[in-house]
Image 1 (tube, one colour):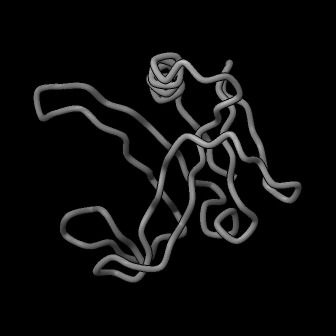
Image 2 (cartoon, rainbow, N blue to C red):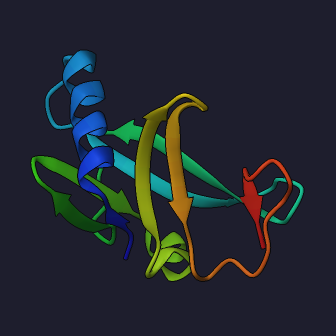
Length: 106
């Protein structure tokens, strides 16, 4: 399943705390779409299904549905904040190619 770096876990923890809602987890999913075929979807979710895969990164829970988990095995979620801007990125060894904007993959 997906690995989350310390930087990403820290930022996700801050964002969840700012939401002020108990029981939120970071859901990472792969959806059809984008210019290369698939795109990543990340959002906070309190509705965890019985077949969801859950991993912990510090105090943060990361939830992935079974079909997305197949495409995210070995992937790493990171967060960077620098001169070029701030944001999350996913390094996915399963992606054969990605689009120029970096938002979708195949």
